[in-house]
Length: 340
Ligand code: KG4
Ligand code: ZN
Image (cartoon, rainbow, N blue to C red):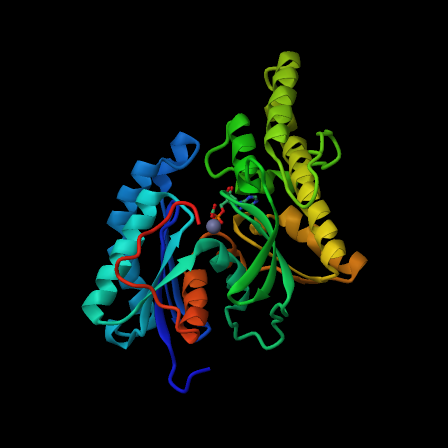
């Protein structure tokens, strides 16, 4: 750790949440997020509306983060932003703001890969003394609305991709299934809540047969759609009558698919340090299954706090801190990228 404390302003605007955080070394002083309700009625994120909402939110969100952290902008050592992957229009708002802010303060900018941010959220230092942090190398299952990956994490800034989805992401599967059920976006948390009152073995869905450590969720979505159509032929109220069991059963399959590949990855690498990250890591079914696997297979498991699972800027600030220590700064002519 450097002799002087490092203060970083992190900005995350890759999708539909405008977020800013202030870090002091590996601790978070403020973590502010402004969710965009505007997408709810559309059943998914509307890119054009997202970038407009980011433009409205970014200044007040950054202002609040600095106030809550109780530091002045002149104390900042760097400004970090999500370079990608994400929606280009949304990324541009965060990147442009970060560049202008850093230029005005005459401090460096740091670009952050959103996926690495999700992984490094595990290293946000907590006051809790018995809190455990992953030991390198560890495996990380990143499950979000846009990605589903298993990576081997060798060090803070070095990872190997072991497997990923060939079509829909796990969060996308939750959201599309929720849409079929008539729920608002994002549907993952709604399914999770209803699933807690249902029987996970009431309805059976096919497990995708994908080789290696890759995933596929689009077949499951189609099977689910057919299941609902045939149920509705029997009764108009099929969903309403069975909603708890339907949610519990479909969540159970998604969790089984994810953890099956995770088990394979531990066998393949011999690594028993297992972390999860990303929005779907907030899912209670996945969390409970991991706790069960920890006992059965002797894993060390790492599950982030809820606010560090879904998109946030604390994970951008912590990643930037490790890049700062490594002198990895970006130049002002850098541009965001939808795919990294
Ligand atoms: O990481 P994230 O906030 O944004 C992306 O980078 O995509 O993940 C958002 C995704 C959405 O698909 C949302 O439905 C899902 O995470 N999600 C959940 C839960 N909370 C958020 N899925 C299942 N159960 C949850 N509790
Ligand atoms: Zn994310």
